[in-house]
Image 1 (spheres, helix red, strand yellow):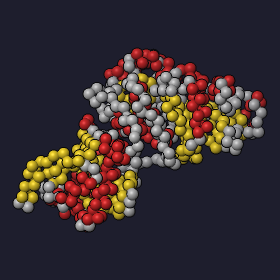
Image 2 (tube, rainbow, N blue to C red):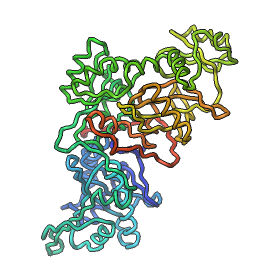
Image 3 (cartoon, rainbow, N blue to C red):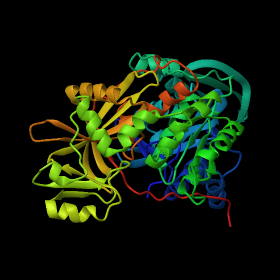
Image 4 (cartoon, rainbow, N blue to C red):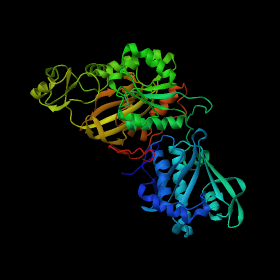
Amino acid sequence: MIQKYHCLPQSVYTWQDYSIQAIQADQIEAIRVWRNAQIEILRQSQPLSAEDQETYFKTVIWPSLSERQPRQVIFSLFHRQQFIGYGGLVHIAWHDFHAEVSFLLDPQIMQDPTQYQNAFQGFLELMKHIAFDELGLNRLSTEIYGFRKQHIALVEQNGFVLEGVLKERVFFKGVFWDAVIHSFLKAAYTQGQQPSLPEPSRIPLNRFPGNILITSAARKIPLIFAVADAARRFHPRVKVYAGDINEHAIAQYYADVFWPMPILADNQAESLKDHCLQHNIRLIIPTRDGELLFWARHRALFQQAGIFILGSDEEALKRCLDKLVFSSYCREQGIPAITAALEPEKIPAPLYVVKERQGAGSHNIGIALALDCAKKHARQLKDPVFQPYIEGQEISIDGYATQTGEMKGIVLRTRDQVLNGESQVTTYFRDAQIEENAAIYARKLGLKGHFVMQAILDSQNILHVIECNCRFGGASTLSLAAGLDTFFWGLLEAHGMCLDSRPFIRKNLAIKQIRIPQDILIYGSCF
């Protein structure tokens, strides 16, 4: 299993023939040898022993992998899969959006000027992407000893600007040498390498931002990571709280703070509001169908306290959570929803789908059943509804609507492999007509915040809407990768800020998402 930083969405990053990944345990000995061979260019006064190296990684590097805002992110560098060096961002000052670049190559690579130049360029390109696109930093800097003339020339060739000189900073071979300071700003990166886009809105750094609460967090780790990414881009001081009634929920290992919440009940609303205020929570993200109505009922109470609940209002939720009501309402509004009935005889069909009437999801669903089998399956359900079975490609339609009803964006994805009602493999695709129609349907349904419509595209490419989930879905992280910036938009709305500066920038490339279980190692001090 490849170790990765939890603060980064990917395990491996690539630029041309170069790639980086978090340092692995079997690479630290080579790094020790390289450091000892080049001690004169490092902030290292004496050779490292194998024990020194192992202790440092156990106590500093391995624990930082699970931190949301580590002091350093360091990587192994590969050229065509050959391990040739390492480096990263160190002395990260999150409150100032600044980090220093650290870099060291295999001494044999250093002896070849061309390989050295190409490797350093590849590494710097990767560091700029990590710093500015992934971590939301604003400034990178380097400190290079004056006798490293080639290294100084290379950082300047790669856009770093001379800022100053630390006079006689280091003593080497009987001579005092200066240290040269260079920097590279995000503005230069944006202008030189990115499309011209409005700068994402940020809350002023001197204003304390509100925190975020994810309720029913359970084991929704990709969602927590996505929220943490938006929080980091919004303001480095925003904390992500994971709430769940299960005090052993896995989410507690991934959020900044874990809150063992009480069971939601109307007589608990006031105390929940007070707890949120005590912890400066300004944005609540409900994630479970069964709690959506509770938060909608008490939206006004929380809103008066300056707490924003991401989601639709009570009326919209009631029409979406009840599949019978949803089907009837959609057909009244001209939305092509699949008919639903309490009795299958009212909707004659060769085959049926049988499911629970209330809520979303596909628990205990019966699919493509003949009439007798459909009736038999219905007896296992609490409150069943019947729908005609329609064969075709199942798709999900992710979208975000602001509190004023503006549609920020629509993302379509096929449900290629489904397990327990959630896509294990899902693929982003484009269809302008479906996107346009979905936005119309969402407005007619009165949706707000993130929503996911489920639908079938039949053999004639006709759309049949199955249901609508008024929350972030299990595989909705693909929609974020495609440009739907749900949680950043939610933060802007929670803080009363304009969303115009953060438009929907759609990705025009193929994206497939594969959801897998992953083991996470959390390192502590030595035994």
